Length: 220
Image 1 (cartoon, rainbow, N blue to C red):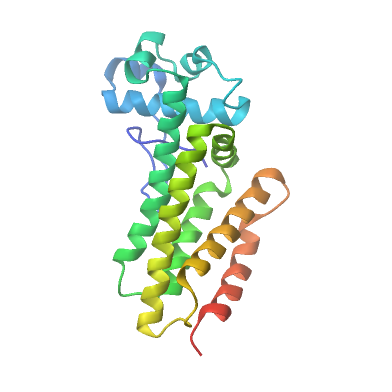
Image 2: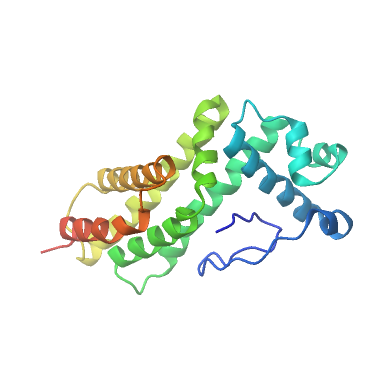
């Protein structure tokens, strides 16, 4: 599975089906500013995951994107600006999945959570560089600040779904914030194991995860 960023032909966020990206040469002539920015972010994803933030240079990003250095600096002021722009994209995609779940009010809450987390696993299951790039933000002070903010928002969204399930009588009365923190932690741990250990099959464990959660959360 190939990571494709906004502005390039990419996946339907719900189906996960990907289209081939525009080539660097053709996009240099015809791409819109949004597509060029996306082209840089896609190159950044590859560079930061392979080399790390500190070892990556602007020249590396120029070479990987296929654009000129002037074009790169037109869209981003610095390597840090590219780095944080990549984080903002990845964070927006993760949070957007839970917004989709919240709008689907005709489904039970556990099924909503299961569907959205399954889609997230599908998105990153074959794309280790997404996880490796995400981990790079831990080594950067402003990246850590952004990560903390994203986790706060994500936990709040999950907690809101838990409260909805309690109100409907679908879930046991447990502290929503604690359940949200635990669920987020379990998902992170599975993703981290998949990124570190190439023999760890993420999908193999998803079914067991939901059996455990359903038994622990469902109202009697």
